[in-house]
Image (cartoon, rainbow, N blue to C red; front, side, top):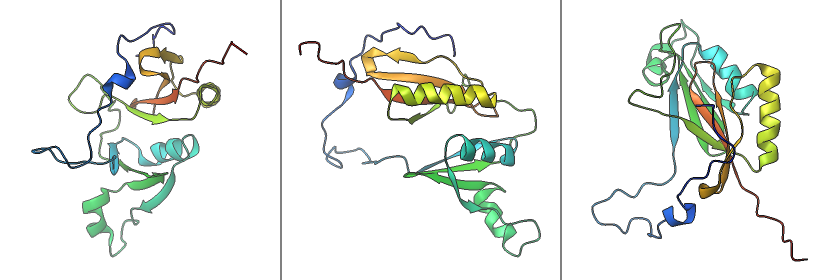
Length: 176
């Protein structure tokens, strides 16, 4: 995952991948919008909560009540003892149902990775320094020129593959 070659170019044009279709106009298809929320299964909800709030800026929106709370059993059916966090328009839940010692495997059916966008390559460089300071496993910043993006892969505490993705800045006009 982390052995990317910075000069690697994809033979795909990102612009060619976009399709101009008005929402809801394709017969036989469900008109979906953006991602409403996602939930990650983790081994240690407190450790993962600290990772996502302190390094990625998520804020806790809803927490499971403590054991013995009158509403705990009903809330467990929804939150599974976890927490829901928010950043921008994205709701992300952490579900502490994985056994201790379990690790994420991108080669199994399910999630391969999750990518968060940032504004610039400078943000990727700053993130790499922050990851180094906090001992977060990460790769190198790789340019995917065919997609017009730079990508910094990293892992959360359970080894879930994550990325930060920044648009490639337009080249400065050399013509004066």
